[in-house]
Image (cartoon, rainbow, N blue to C red; front, top):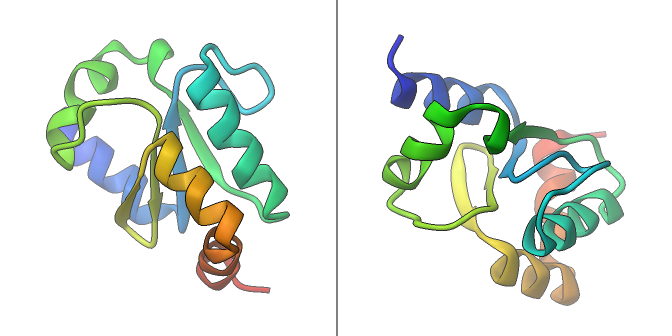
Length: 105
């Protein structure tokens, strides 16, 4: 399986996933930290991929959805965006609704 197929499998197998620098508990950059905090505040579980631990994903993720920066948030297989978009959606209440609908419960 090539790296773009691996990324696609991660995106499609998880209702909510963030590709970030570090982990939600130990983020390695401010943008990843703020994005993970917004997702955690939604109160639902989400998957994460530490792009610093997987150089192949780090190098190729920007090609996957033509989005050049990290973090990248995907909900139901679609790229939502990075830090700024995620925080804006959270402030409007849209992120919580999307995450809840994607995860269920």
